[in-house]
Amino acid sequence: MNNNMQNFWYSPAYVIHMQAELTKIYGQEIIDKDTQNFRKIGEMKCAAIMLLALHKAQGHHFYMQASKEEFPDVYTLYQEEVPGKLLDTKWQTVEVVTYDPHSEGDIADFILKTKLMNPKKGYDEDTVILCYIRKAGTYVDFNNIYEKLEKNKFKPTRVFIIGNLVGNVNMFVLTQVWPIIHHESVDYIERTKAYPLPYRNFFVRGTPRTIESKTGPSLPINPYEPFDIDEEKVKDKYKK
Image 1 (cartoon, one colour):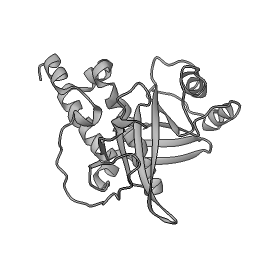
Image 2 (cartoon, one colour):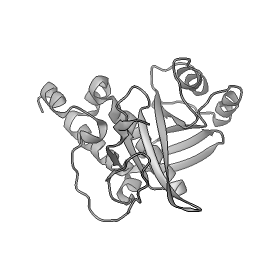
Image 3 (tube, helix red, strand yellow):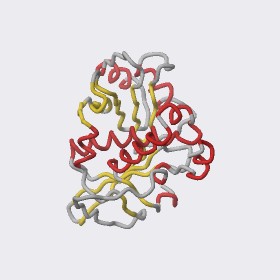
Image 4 (cartoon, helix red, strand yellow):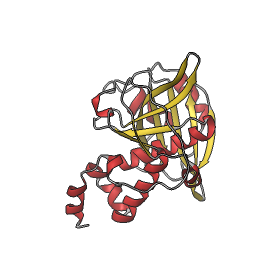
């Protein structure tokens, strides 16, 4: 963790709201093509949906932050009660990889090649690997993925796969494929509406702080901010 983390953190619900705002402004086609300026939008959205599913399953109040470095893609945190402590803040790094129409091989081999067994990647035990299935018609054999991962040695202790349910763009299924297989479905739009406030908070590494949840309206601040996008640069490029 580095000093860049001593900035504002955002709830996954806020990230989803701001992603939607930027999509209205620029359109999905531009956001997909202009990876130099907009790459973090897709990574943060995937991680946000994962956190919404984990919130549904575990009840933890998550926050997230876009990394300003090549690795990781996203930082996340949550708090839980621990005996002898008021609260314990857990920090994780998330690395997002997309299995898209140009991806080859089965999903297990793809994850192993691009992330888990890639000699150029120095992931540690706390890195969460999240694979987004964006290739239409992809068949996912979760048992086969688990069996292939089991035959290899790698440091990350949690590997997830996420993808849409056919026929419902709002419904995603998050599946943990390592070290266990577990499925959690989530309507990310509905979970976003119900997610506890505040949307934006400030945490400093090593300093415990209670997340004071509340409900009620929370006004948007700046859709560019959570994704670390140079607002003036992209506005000038696309004449917005």
